[in-house]
Image 1 (cartoon, rainbow, N blue to C red):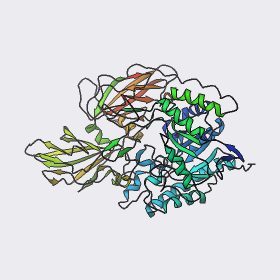
Image 2: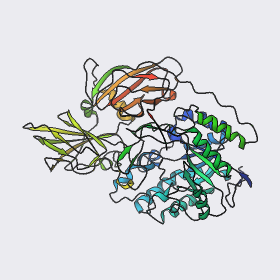
Image 3: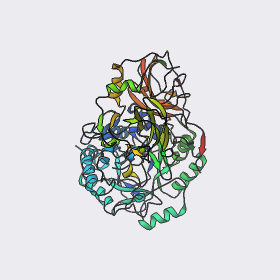
Length: 597
């Protein structure tokens, strides 16, 4: 028999829970960025730091990878995650979206939405609202019994995310609020915006909260002008920052962080540390920004957070623990022991196979007179292709100037009869194809480097070839298109093919395979990608993420829970040229450091 409890209230200047004043001391950790075997370890470390609340987003694109096909298993078992938070003694603020930003591909929205050429994301456009309603029909019943009022840990639920920075539809936030309430969400509702979005992101009857990294006195007075005599919650206090390929590893000074956190708490405000533990953008899930130029995010989501990507303590952790202990009557729990890291030596590379020899196993290519973008390819039961690479093939005569007209999203290698003639992207939109009399195959291997997750370009995130490409100013026609999504089925299918040994040097794109030997109980490790150019690594079929020698990130985190005692299969897709070796190390290298101003 369940006892109804009085949930979180925000009726005056203090939060009340069970009618008693509380201060929310929160931290963000995303279940989908942390292997489920490590969830409890990270939660215990949060508790030992003095936190009482965990916040997490819900990634729609992982839970509904194909329209109407839902996945809440394994690392996506949200119910288990919520139960575990309850067991550890953490309240939960749930941020179910449908849009989450989070440096996550398309801000968590599934790519199949973009099959509709008229799609208007994050609005009350019927194509979007109908899909959102169907997702919430599946998601919300799974979490309603985890609400505080029904005996669970969820004390608040966020309505969308930073909508004030988008604000394309005055009716949209009310639609999301109603969709949550109608399905049984009873806890306190809140919004979350930075200072630029605060004026446009609120909705009646919902508590507004603020996001920032550096405190400005005007923020709190402005928040008070919007909702007088309400408790203040800094929903996202940014403890660090994320990294882009080709940039530096961002670091935010620990003393600056502590000064601001102390100031927030002295004002009597509640706070949520974003991120407390960042984790990893496994697979192809990292997002991108596109303002003046397109910049894709790296695989690591370390974020310079108090807990590192692999769950290790930092100086930020210990200083926060010291500060937050003052807000507890009882002593904090002891700090849990670190999860040991190991080095397993080199990966024993054994064999390789060219991408061109893999194409026979990918099934019959799609055919079209004009190129079709990735999302609209007739694959995956009418859901198109979401992630990875697409190979476009056309027959050309002779050579001359090849021009993309900006229609390559996001990056492509161009080949003539499997010989590379160069790369194109947003900046480099043309190259010269050597003049040879006769017909040849032109192959364009396009990589989706990550969809934009923030800003006004969400509706423009179709990938692959999104329009015509030209040779001698004439649009190419009659394409064969191979979908190379490199999911687990694709990678396991490689083992049925005829591989070559490594006796001769091969230029990419090439798959390499080798063995990582683990003699005893597997432990966390890191793959050092030094000497390798650009590609993706899989361990036992699971996608560790992208690597790229432009940095800053040089290691890939390998969770011990993904390894097996004995032989582990390592598969690398290298776009250009392999490194001389591939080896493991027991510490990450995230690249040259740049302090966040």
